[in-house]
Length: 175
Image (cartoon, rainbow, N blue to C red; front, side):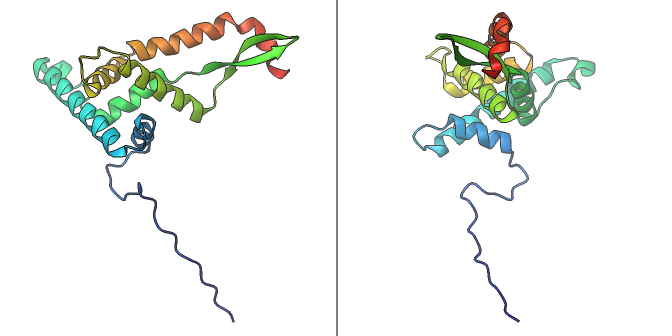
């Protein structure tokens, strides 16, 4: 009887056994990262979460007792709801038919939809007032997206309107 041994792979550098690890926040940090500077991206996301927590706590303490229970205080839950609110269902892709380029609406796969939602949030936060810190504008964008308002949600709605306007070209999807 021969015993076969398998090599043990080393864990990835981002692997953790922490109960606070969240896959979507990790993906968002990776999308936010520029030139491999993960530490800066993590600090920006964490600082934005601290801002969200402080803003929500202020709302919580200023609200009457019956309304205070409805205020969400967990920044990760706020992030998930904001991401769900800005995730598009449709997008367009280019198809050339008879020498003419058409933008046809197509359904977005879940992974790509999540990526587009994160991109909308990052673009909206980066395009805000340059005098404001990025993490502060990111916190405000996430809170407004949580309430289904703001620039990131508007980008999603604009994309859906564009898809609705181009729905007459949907039959070119199979060409």
